[in-house]
Image (cartoon, rainbow, N blue to C red; front, side, top):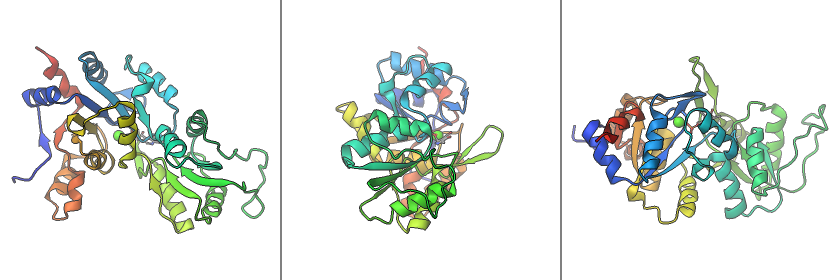
Length: 305
Ligand code: PLP
Ligand code: CA
């Protein structure tokens, strides 16, 4: 009682929050859609905010698609007025990090999907070719590229022991950076099953290399730095971060000084948020959302006159 955060809001409170903020950051899966199924009302919320002159951007830890491909997904699911410039994915931000922050000289060894490689290539970051030419290579005799300056781990549904072994070898060199697009542990599937996330692959490589990974996606601040540098003059106090996972989205908002909102259409439940709020451990308070709604469709009545 009397603790800050987890405020369940509705009608008039949502209306005044939407009026007070001018910059909205939306997580994608669990907030706008579940896989290929749009969440009812979400597209209308996004287009209304945009039409009313609000800034809207999307921050996703999903590294599997290049941004262009995301534009098509938004369109396909009914979000018809979303543009490339509004999309900040962990693969795009990883490419910016390698190109602009570390200015990597040499090649990047990528564990990830083709979409991640495409995003790096679009940014002019050279990647080690996948060894299609040596299908029978083993960890004992496979070729290692001589100039690998970073290992980047993303979601990879074709992860192999050979990739793990190569990456561990590259990471023996202390000059070789160890990066991950995101550290998500798992993702829910609509069937009720789960999908192991890139965090599970990174964990294996952390053990094998004895090193700690640097995360680019949420909850790291870097994604917000990418947004700030492309939308000049973003004031954190004017922003609302909307997400469904406490350990990534809410922590990301807290790390960047943004107000946060949990929607209950995804991974985290309100009970978990309340547990973090009631915890004696103050570091747990960074996971606590300022506001909670059942779904972002709850914004719709607030738009009515
Ligand atoms: N990475 C992968 C491979 C995913 O499938 C998902 C969600 O489906 C995510 C990350 C999380 O995406 P978001 O940050 O949009 O919730
Ligand atoms: Ca999500």
